[in-house]
Image 1 (spheres, one colour):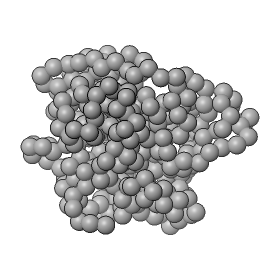
Image 2 (cartoon, one colour):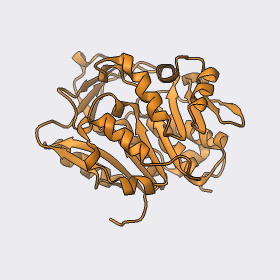
Image 3 (cartoon, rainbow, N blue to C red):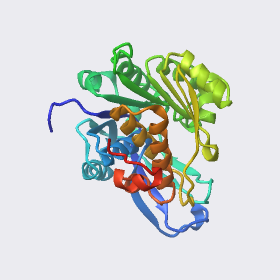
Length: 321
């Protein structure tokens, strides 16, 4: 451990993912599973670390055997676990999935009565470290219930996006099943975005935040909320990225999909890499698309995150500078 600022701090969900080793069948017929570290914010930290970033995650596990597993896995991936808290009575979440390539991957979350990562409180945050991080990343899941909502917003408010060079990413990451009243999701998404410099979401997620699935209109609405970069993921149609200067459509990198669940998190880690390097947005999104494609062609999430060497051939250019 050191006291130097982190390249990236993420905040949000963690869990243990159980991936079926039989493809194309429902959970009732799966015989064996493979265990992997999971959770969107956690996976983004892992993905960025694999690309060279000094990363940490703010999250919480249960006081159960999966808690030590999460911490050990994070350290193995090069992610600092100093802000992985522990809840004395709740259990570390477990997530099952089904695999029906190319685009059907249902999830079954075990997070009842609530997940430890939803119990993060404001007084547990190291706001000085959050302010100092080169990139800070939050997710929509963290807004879905208290006290995590207040903690997430307090962390976002601790970073002044008016400061030159501040990079604060809000991943809209909308999971309807996590909201007791989904009608409130748009309000809290917009509140978070008012403190962010970069917004990321797919067409359904941006619609929750700004009321339209049209990629261009949604990007304009996100920019109107004050973000500097609006990223709308469109699946097979690629990614629309908008800034105050220009809009661009970045095509996807073709892949034979095995499991698409980790692709968005790999995209996020590569997005962070480009932001840290000061790349232009089109180059950054090309790398992010390549990372998403790379993981979509593999079974696991965290365990499949690529290195820069893995991505070089997919983007057809030098990715280290």
